Each structure stands twice: as C-alpha cells, then as structure tokens.
Image (cartoon, rainbow, N blue to C red; front, side, top):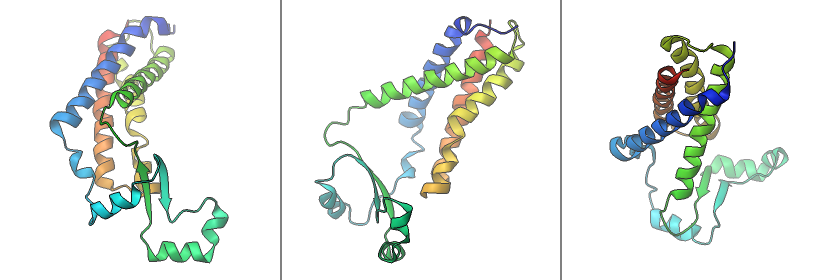
Length: 184
C-alpha cells in the first residue's frame, strides 16, 4: 500500500530546513568553497571593461548558433583565446534574500520528489534503513547528480565540482535520515 503525500508533509519540510541549515554551515563556517574561485590577473581592468554590462550570462567569443561556430573568424578567436563563460550579477547590495528563498524552495522541491518516490515504493511503517536507502538514493541523485556536468561541458574545475558533489551527498544523507526518522 502506498503512503499518501499528505502524510509526508513533516519529513518534507523538516528535511528542507535541515539541508538549508547544513548548507549555511558549509558555506559560512567551513568555507571550503572559498578556493573554488580565482582572482583575475588584472581584476580592476576587467571590472572597468564590464562596468556597463547588464546582468546576464555571456560567452567570449560569442557564437549564437552552431553555424556561427563554423565561421573561420570565430574559430580563430577561440584558438587565440581567451575563451570564457561569464555571469554578471546585478550591481549593488550583497543582500541574498532572493537566492536564499530560491534555495529553500529548491530544497522543498527536492524533498517533495523524494517523498513522491518513497511514497510509491515504501509501505507505512517501513524500517528506518529501508526508508533511508530509498530516500537517500533519490536525494543524493537530486542534490549531487548534475554537478559533474558543469565540469564536463562548461570547464568548471573538477575540484570545485567534487566539493559540490560532496555537499550533495551530505544533503542527501541528511534528507534520508529525516525521512527515515519521520516515516509514518
């Protein structure tokens, strides 16, 4: 017999809160992600060059289509370098309210997906370790599964993405623990 998602509202919310708090501790206390970003050789010149750039995602050299990438001029620019992908944030305040709200919403969404898979695969009263295995597998895949793609396709350093995978495993195991603990 499947478990109703309505019965899983508590593990959904508690696991999202636990992951949110754990991620805050990782980023603010442990700070092992600080080494993920390097300083540009002439940061002030780059800042000056980007001053009028509106927030968004950019690539240098830019090719809007695969046909553009076949253009010999674009290929020469790419060969000569530098080639880069860049995200420009809005200027101004360092307030992170919007990002924190989006992150918590994402945590709830992952916990909801974990709850869905667990609800259709686990019966009421299932053993803690059985719930932990199912919920943990889904949560680890959700939090960590896509991180290597950034290294494969966009050139992110593997060491930075390995830390993201580690974070995802931690978040997944915490989610699994909450679901195992609060399983109806």
